[in-house]
Amino acid sequence: MRALIAGNWKMHGLEAQLDEIETIAASVKASPPAVDVLICPPSTLISRAVQKSAGRLNIGGQDCRSEADGPFTGDVSAEMLKDAGASTVIVGHSERRKHYGESNSMVAKKAQAAWRAGILAIICIGETATQRREGQALSTCGHQIAGSVPDEMTLAANAIGYEPLWAIGTGRSATHDEIVEVHAYIRKCLVTRFGAKGRNLRILYGGSVDPSNAREIMALPEVGGLLVGGESLKAKEFDSILRVV
Ligand code: PEP
Image 1 (tube, rainbow, N blue to C red):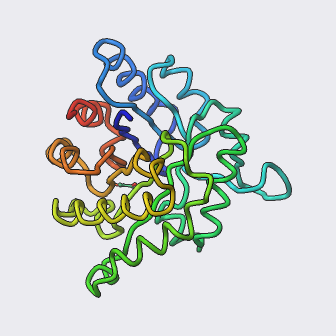
Image 2: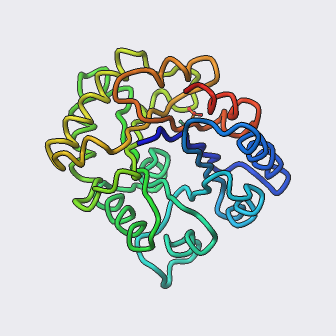
């Protein structure tokens, strides 16, 4: 399975920001990287991002509701994301869990909704600073995997995103030892649960990845890709992260 480098734009980006996608797509066309590339802009930009990417990049959503449609003002379903041209959706990002109280079972339903709609899911997990301080990083991730990852999670192109909350947007990525330990544990959980198929699922690291640390993180065992927030908004930085493999 090729590595996946995914950019999460969060709630950033008006139309002018699509120029960054055009620039990255042109660079990918001129010199294809050795990784799969995904950019997840706000849902208002998805269909225009698909046009700008001209088939060179995958475009995804940042969240979906688990129902296909209905009286859920303001929400977007996985079917709607697919209709707009998304190939993938991020579910269970810690900002969704924190600001919207999303539970593990809600996240699992969102992943199932993605598969129902025919798109892939990146299921995010990760411990808080307090949980890490109290020695609960692994147990927290294990609990989140048990509750947020549905039994149907067997297609290798799906991914788990490990994002320690204290590393997101702080400029302080996890240490190599921390990443290696948690990724090994996640792999163990996946293999225990899914057998051989659990070996192929990609585990992405996220949390203050930038062009200066991406190469070393990508070289760590069981790191199958990166989930990049802030640095994915700038074509130059994101493009250089795509070149670290
Ligand atoms: C994220 O929000 O998924 C993320 C990893 O953000 P950042 O790269 O900015 O830490």
